[in-house]
Length: 208
Image (tube, rainbow, N blue to C red; front, side, top):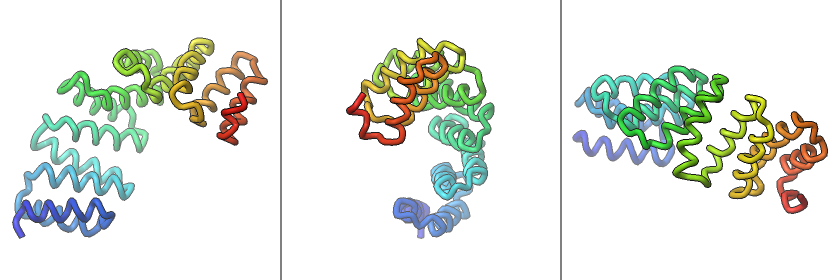
């Protein structure tokens, strides 16, 4: 079987969840063409789907060693690193992706989330501001900015962004939970408890 046919077979096996068989086929591609970045990337994606993040990163590294301008693989490597809490390394990858495309929103948002995890809230807010300028209805960016503001002690400001997120998704339990923390920080206990009721019973959103 030639490389193209093997790649097609491997991709199909990956899509239907036959990950071990997909890996076998990607390895067969790489036996014939060790510099095939598509095989390396997709093999990495299979490992990611299996929760084998370190193996996925090794595949992405191999592909990037061949072609360091593969923007999607920089993003995928960063995402895998973020999932195993290697936030500093993840940010490096997201920055490499952004150096290739400054408007790559997925890279910018994940850089922001990683900065939040590191407690670098002002830098995170700068990322989310850029996203919200072009996509004001981005629920995740609004929520993440709210979290950053709250962690900086700017609870009143954080509520603006939690409410903005809830305007677009009125039963998002994650947002209500984070809003409840900000409200408690402000001593607004009854409102915080109302938010937590929605976390536990999402249909209660209609009662507030």
